[in-house]
Length: 225
Image (cartoon, rainbow, N blue to C red; front, side, top):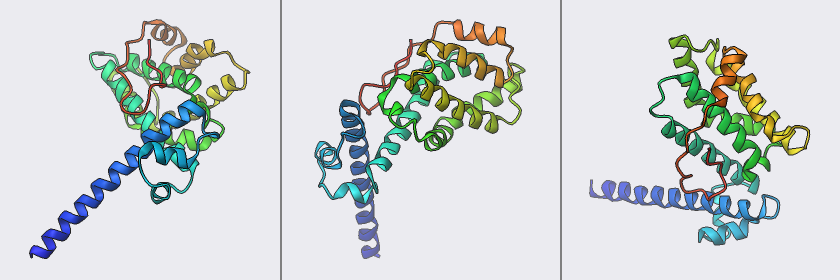
């Protein structure tokens, strides 16, 4: 019995060490990729910054691209939590959804860690669907219940929205669309959720709440207005 208990404790320590290493690598990758870009960042430099062995990184991530996607997942998860916190006292789910859309669109066009991965549109849209989706889909359902929104299938609406956001980000990155058009893009996406253009324009024109600081992944994520 004692042997089993000791084995359980050992497994717990291993799991904790693995979690710490993974988190350290994601933080280090976020910092290095923010400073130098994904292409210029090296796995060795990221491992050094995380204070782990050079070969250790490959125990957690098969490639630098996999690590970059993990960084993006954490950024998106953190962003949805920050929007949720900043809008916690808002009574109107349509208003919260408008804030979320504007914030995500802004981040997709200003945060270098997003912009460098936008070319992999399917991957970015999928990460956005999974990481921001629980918050966004819940807002769409709340809006439908209150009569403020009529998104139909909320999950489908959010999935289509993620691809539209990636497309808008790519258009800005390629110089085909000015970043100043993002509020209009948000209006169109709000219309997809069932709002009239006039109501959508009124919501996007409202001052946005200040988001709390990004947690643990560097300083380059959008902070809202």
